[in-house]
Image: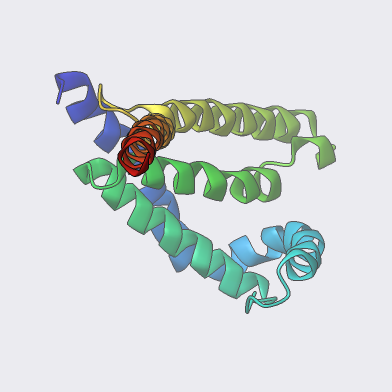
Length: 176
């Protein structure tokens, strides 16, 4: 593991641990902001996956999001499942950004500018997380492994078919 990865992951994870703890401490304030987003997203999620028990209470969703951020950040910082944890963090950042930094709804120019800056900061962090999500550390990724396994199966199937044809020809020659 390079020194960059050794330092970058914990640095990237820090904001999510702090943000998750803040959301747990101030759940009601976060839930009030999140309600605008959850009122639209929850019905769509329930329609898309009716078999899943999706909570409808914004405070519960804030807690779930905070917990996911803290757990995924800890995993990313310690290098456990870094691609999965980076993906979870990127996904959790979307509702946080849309609900918490809706600069397009601000009327005060200073508040609008501050929210826009936070929105762009979160977008930048998301870019870093997406890079971390696809970083294979020089090891083959899952897609490569799947393609390789499929090629191995095809090669083995050709070999078995060739052997079967040869055996069939030998058996035919022995019968005649």
